[in-house]
Length: 280
Image 1 (cartoon, rainbow, N blue to C red):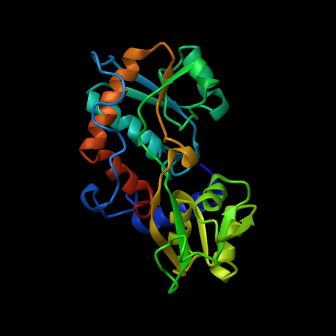
Image 2: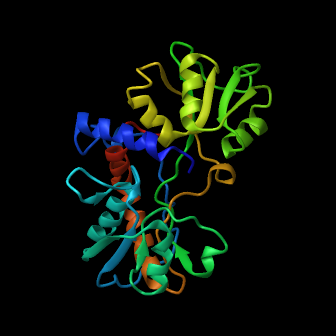
């Protein structure tokens, strides 16, 4: 995921100040969040483990961060706690620097990582991954009142801001070839070009965009336009819990819990707690 942690951290503080711990009053029923876990996918569950020791980092808001009372929270952290509630077992969540999370599992100091660790062939030598519990969609953001449904035709000849060299730039180039790409080096620069009118739209990750739209800099200038794009070839197949590569029993229990949490709307409700609005 490519978004500015500093931008989100600043916006998150404002949103939490205004609305308290739950940053949205919506519910799973009207959130528009899609089902992320196909029924029956993932490893079949056996007996639940007696407990789970999760590790996470504390510097990746809104996914893992220290709240105003000094406690670890965030979307990843609350998903981990929901897994344990679903399995009816105790769990702990410990903080480690992100580069040391893998070592904690390899050295049996932890059972699972709830920090969005990338699923790569190299890491799969050491880790097994759960079914996904979160996918960040890509979205168009445009200024008011120039909000029309994005399409190859409507964006023909229009300037679309993207982060230079990003998956978002690749996607626009492949599927909106008549649009004019306007590369930026950072999200702050990207959104500034949108607000100033230098570009007609931006195309980027929905997480960073949602916090910018809800923050003081945007000042209501802009909004999401069109639907969400989730093509895995461009935007990945989602966040997953990581466990030791040979711990198939724990993976099965976590997969089962995540399927249930997705089916009953818990994952959507948690997302609505930590993002200013539905990302979809």
